[in-house]
Length: 409
Image (tube, rainbow, N blue to C red; front, top):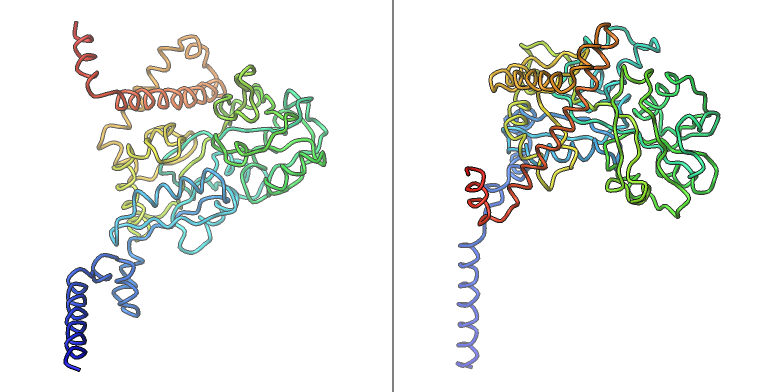
C-alpha cells in the first residue's frame, strides 16, 4: 500500500511539474495576435472603432486574374496591425469595379482598366465620369491575348466568327468591343466565363477566346493545348493608337501557345489603374487613402522582387496617365521624393532617343500617339532596369569587388 501511495505521489508531482512548465511556456494569444485580441474584446466600441479606422478596402477582379493577385500582394506587404489593413475583395471585373467604387459602401480603392471610363462615356452611360475618380498610380499594361485555331493568323481573319469575350461585368469585353469597333470589324460576341469558354473552344463550339490581362495570365498559361491552337497577332493599327499601346507576347510567357520557333506574337495592351473616388481632402476616406499611399509608396521597391507577381516589375509610380487626375496626396508624395521630376526626365530621354517622332508630333492626335509610345517605352525600360538590378543583387558576393575593380580601370 505504501508503494502504491508513493507512486501516486510521484505521479501527482510530475503532473504539477508539467503544468508549471506549461504555464511558463504558453503565450497569451491576445498578446501576440491583434485579431484574437479583437475577439476577446468583442462588443467594445473602442475595438470596433480601431478595426474600421485604418482599414482600406480594395475591389480587385475575378479569381485567377492578375487583379486578385495584386490585391493579395498589397495586403501581404502593407498590413501592419491596427495601423493599416488592406482588405482585398474578389470583384467581377473592371466595369463592375467602377460601379463599386462609385456606389458600394466601404470600397476605397479598385483596379480598373484605363479604357473603361472612356467606353462608358462614349456609349452614353456616364458623363464627365473621370472627374469623379482619381488615380494613385498606373499599374501595368494588360495585353490582349487571342486564342484561336492555327488556321487564323491575324485578328482581322476573325471577322464574322463567334468569339468569347468573358462576362459583361469585366473589362475584356469592353476592350474587345472597342478594338473591333475601331478596326471596323464585326463578330458574333458571346459572353462566357473564361474557363468554360476555353472548353467550348476545344470542342469547336466557338472560334476564339479573347483574354485581356497582365501576362502571364493564369487561365491562358494553363490552357491545355493539344497542338491545334495558338495566339493570334493583333496589329498596332492607327485606329488603336489613341487608347492602346504596342505589346509583345513571347514563348517564355506562353510556351503552351507560342513555339520557340515562332518566338513572339505582336499584340496590343491597355493600362491597368489603381483608382479611387475623388474624395474631398477634409474627409476621413481621404485620410485613409493617404495612409495607404504612404505605406504603398514607401514599401514599393519590395513588390518588384519575388514572391510577388512579375507584373510589379513594370510599375513606375510616377508614370503619368493621360486624361486622369492623380490623388493629391499621391502627387505630393512623389513631388517630395523627387519622382515626379524623374518621370519628366525620362520623357526627355525618350524624346532624345526618338527625335523623328518628336519632330513629327504636330497635331493633338500625333502627340497622343507619341505619349502612348512613351508609356510602352517606359514600361520596357522599367522592366529592364529591375531585371539588371536583380541580376546584380543575385551575383555571387565574391565577384562584386572584382567587377568594381574592373569598372574603375
